Image 1 (cartoon, rainbow, N blue to C red):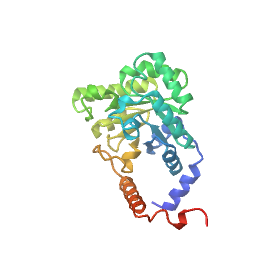
Image 2 (cartoon, one colour):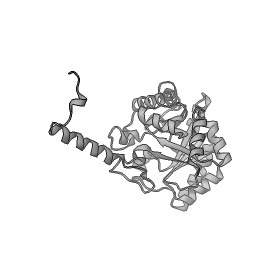
Image 3 (tube, helix red, strand yellow):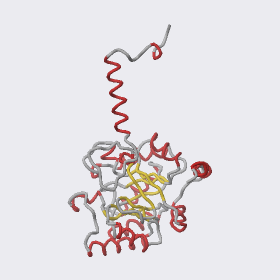
Amino acid sequence: MDLRKFEEGVRMTASKKITVKDFQTMKEEGEKITMISAYTYPIAKIIDEIGIESILVGDSLGMTILGYENTLEVTMEDSIRHSQAVARGTNRALVIGDLPFLSYGIDDHETVRNAGRLIKEGRCEAVKLEGGRERKEEIQEIKAIGIPVLGHIGLTPTYINELGGYKVQGKSTKAEERLVEDAKILEEAGVFGLVIESVPWKLAKKISENLTIPTIGIGAGQYCDGQVLVIDDLIGLTSDLKPKFVKQFANVGSIIADAVKEYLEEVKSNKYPSEEHRYGN
């Protein structure tokens, strides 16, 4: 690849705001979609300027940012606050807010209200929620007021207690058939795209080829129309949970540890601050 041409292409498209319509165009033209789950202003700014098409403010923020045991503790206020931060750092990428556990699935009116809060207060441009056929009516209600919806099937973390842990889904014939059916139902309900998480690659390929909308894979192989990773996994800030599908593109955690260690040593030895770091004559 000619790196100069690539960088020029990124600069030329940097001012073009990505919308859900662009996702569909990319699917039709065979261009892979890039998405990253991120939660803070400085990281969102870097991601946006690089040219990533979408930032998902995922409920994974509960584990990566807030130190929760799982995603079930995340509140609407958590999601809104971090969505606001990401939106402030984003000019080009499509910002998608994740509806947390109990913000949907109880009452359709409450679901719509919470989706609206992510758009109005969180400054998101679309929302995501987990589940298959059981989400059909809620998706239709959300779309009815003009909010684009991203679906999510396979390993769905809000169902973690029912699933019995973070396990690969769709391994049996019955489970495979249900996921294929769920994907089609969600497409018919009007989702603009579908996250497929932790399923065998052949199943993800089958689903992707069976849909006219784009699929975004995470632990679902290379045949999805796009990919998403959590930024903390991507840059090596997480150490306690390392799914098989994660590729660590950098080890920022060790860089931070080395920097803090050096700071500790210099303060203890009175090496820092030196003359160049102080005010006055």
